[in-house]
Image (tube, rainbow, N blue to C red; front, top):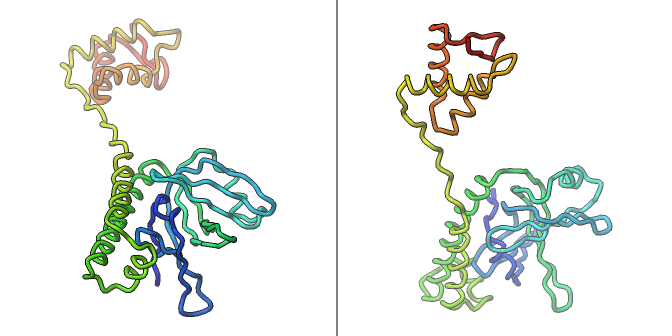
Length: 260
């Protein structure tokens, strides 16, 4: 079974080659300058625009290198109805079919989605890294084709059509590098500070006395204020328990404490 191709918009948007399948029932491949053979594709990015044209829904899907044109036929279809509910912008993954049409001297490229799923930035970033790796592998194969040491017919077809030069490969490699650099490093979760139990007790009592109302103060509020000082929740709860045992405070109702 043919797998879905991962390809950047910056590579796909330069495509001018369509290759028909051996049988009449299968769709044609869209072959990119970077050597990707795209029929079924797996994409990820941000939907930045959703518009309706007659019976079609068009969406702009942006990845770190450019944008894809998504075309959903049948504005009353279940997929179109689902996509209309997606907030703009939102990160999504898309599986669909790559299409290339020629209209006079113009090439019209689009993706016909079969499935659109809302995801988070982490999923988009993972797709970017995996697509970068796949693209670099294809660029290396094209480099070997330039040296006449590659025998893969698909690589040779792309190389001959686009007359690939070392400069063109460098541009595509730079595109991949920029895509990877666009990924933000994961935020580091602050490590709770180690504080003497007696100091935690004093702080909790101070917060309790300052913010206590008729019902006292919610334990959640104490945890929120102490988290701003990077004190571990377990240490705070232990301090509250010790204050209750020592009759420094009591629980007027569940989830609340109040100084005596």
